[in-house]
Length: 466
Image (cartoon, rainbow, N blue to C red):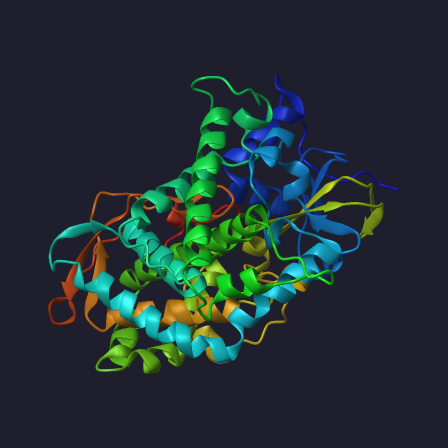
C-alpha cells in the first residue's frame, strides 16, 4: 500500500519544522498540501501521525464516523492544561457524554426559543450602533466581539455583562491567541515566569473564575428561560445535577463558539461589502426602513452571509483523531492519527462553486451544495448546535448596521487573517462609519493577505495556489 504523499521534512528541523509551519499559518500550509499532493496527504511524506483529507466524500467519512474519529481537543491538549480547567464542553466531548450534553443544551436552540433571542439581539445591536460617531474611526473587530459577547451572555446566561464585556472578551481573546496547541506550549510545558504556558494557565483560571461567578449569581437569582437554566435543571438517571465545574466547562465552550465565530463573520462580511459596491448597494436598498424582524428574514443578507462563510469560514480546518485503524481512500490510517479536513479547501471547489475566489452572493440564488460540500457549521454528530441562532444573530446585526451606516476600512491598514483555533481578521481593523446618505463615491481598496484568500478586484494574483 502506497505511503501517504506529502512534503519532505524541513532540512534542519525535520518534521517539527513542518508542524511549526502549519501552526504558524494553517490556511496556507493546508492549501499547499491540497494543490501539490492531492485528496489525502501528510504533514510530511509518509506521515502516520497527521494527515489531511480533502473533498466532500472525505468530509462525510471523517465528520460522521464518530465511533472512529473523535474530536481532537481532549487528546491533543497537554495533560497539565486539562487538569487546570474546571470542566469541558460540547466541542471536547465524544460518545455517550457528548450525546447527553447535547440533549441538555438543545432546547435553548429550538425555533420556539428564537423569538426570545431576537428581541435581545435587536436591542443590543441598536445600542452598539448608537455608540458610533459618524466620521470617527473605531476598531471593527473589537466592536463586533463586544457586541456578540454581550448577546451570547444575555441570551444564554441571562446576564448582561456590559461593564465586564471587555475584560471577559480579552480573556477569551488571550486564550484563543495563546492556543492550546501552540509550539511554545506543546514543546515547553513548564509553569515558569514569562512562559506562554504560564500565561495560558493564568487566562484559563481567570476565565473559569469569571464564569463560575455567573453560575453562582444565577443559583441565587431565580429561574430564567435560557440555556443556563437548562443546564442547572439537568438531572441524570440518579437525580444528580451538573457540578459547578461541569457547568463552567459547558459555558466556556458555548461562550467562545457563541460569539467569536459570529463576530469574525460579521467583520469579514462588512469588509467584503465595502469592496463590492453593487452588492453593498443591494444590501443598503434591502435594509432601508426595515424592522429587525424583516432583517432576520432577508434573503439578501442571507446570501451575503452564506458567501462570506463560504470564502472565510471561521473554522477553516476541522481535526479529528482516530481511535482505531481505518481507511481514507487507498491509504491505511493507524489509530491515534490526527486527521484534518478543510472547509476552506472544500468551499473553493470550482466544480461546485464557479469562480470560487470571487465574492458573489448572487450565486446563492441557485446554488444547492450538499452538507459535505458546504459546511460552515460543520457536519455529523458535532455539527454546530447554534447554527440557527448564529444566522438570526448575524442577519439582525448586519441589518441594524446597514440600515444606518456603511463601514469603510481606513486606508493604509492591511487586513489579514489570524488563525488560532478560529480564523478572524487580524486586529485592530479601523473603520469609519459613513451615514447611508453620505457614502463616498469611491471606496479605498484594502491591502493585506485578505487578497490571498479572495479575488476582490479581478486582478491576476497568487492566491494560495488557486
